[in-house]
Amino acid sequence: MTAEQHADGVWELTLNIHHALYDGITLPGILDKLRQNVVNNNKKDEQKNPSSRPWRSFIAHHQSPGIIDERKAFWTQYLADAADSAPPPQQTRHSFGDRTAYLRRSAVSGMGTMNTSCASNGVGLPALVFAAVAQSLHARRVSSSEPVIFGIYYSNRAEKDDPATELYPTLNLLPLKVMVQEKTGLMELAQDVQQDLHRITSLANSTVGLWEIKEWTGVAVDVFVNFLNLPKRQEPPDVFHEVVDDRLFNEDNRPTSRASPDPSNFDATWLSKNTVRGAFPAAMDIEAAVNGDALDMGVFGSVARTTIEEAKALVDGIAGCLSLFKT
Image 1 (tube, rainbow, N blue to C red):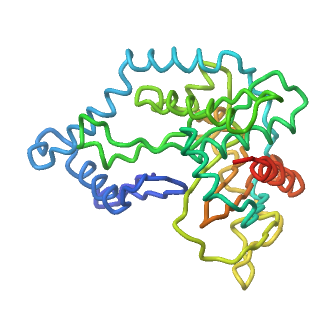
Image 2: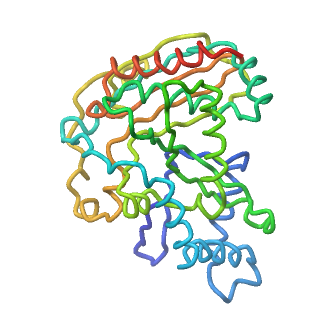
């Protein structure tokens, strides 16, 4: 969000949403609530806009010392056996805008059967996919004694005792720890993942920030997994992979691989002094979407973080784990 004051004293707020999950909450409703809170956010107008009171209380509650200490204790214990993060790949002026994008549609079939099997074992389908991702990431590492850690996207639901919070856009990025053992089957691993999902997504624990995780545990998350369940398939199977500078397109609006211009803000003072910048290293995104009875998968990240060949191998590994799963 940026705020700009015009010559007549009027402030203009510009909000750019890059990536968000709202768990069934409509974007217009969220923006309307944001407008109300910004325009009427003073004590004189609280009678006109009572929604601003629970919003301030909501924020204040999760920033109170007691709540911060509670989630610090949980995350410090939860990630106690995780090693400090290795230095992230260096971003340069030449690699900053160049990105790897690999997408494979229908990477895995039979998702309906897998979903039924998951339900009979008390496991959600996301937990099964997360377990397969963990196994694939684990197989690519030199050391096998440490847990696999990656971030997941979690959108908080409304607090049960306070329905007024139902429109609050509380999207969080949470570290998920998976201890992969060679003799552990995929469903057994998914059951462990499911238990951890219940733990880390509790209201008190899920309000953590990745900068807090980095400060408290030394862990900087550099892999994120986003799971979506789409209603039905609308596009034919396809494979798409290119090195992408997403600001440059050709006449057909197809991304092209080209050297990007120097980003104007790469060395900006405000960015270099950002206290949370170190908690967000050059990251890789793994996208998994159930589309009908198939699973589409993609891997996205800077060229410094992953190559096309590495992205393809990762998708091969995840698809292989799920395809070998015996329902």
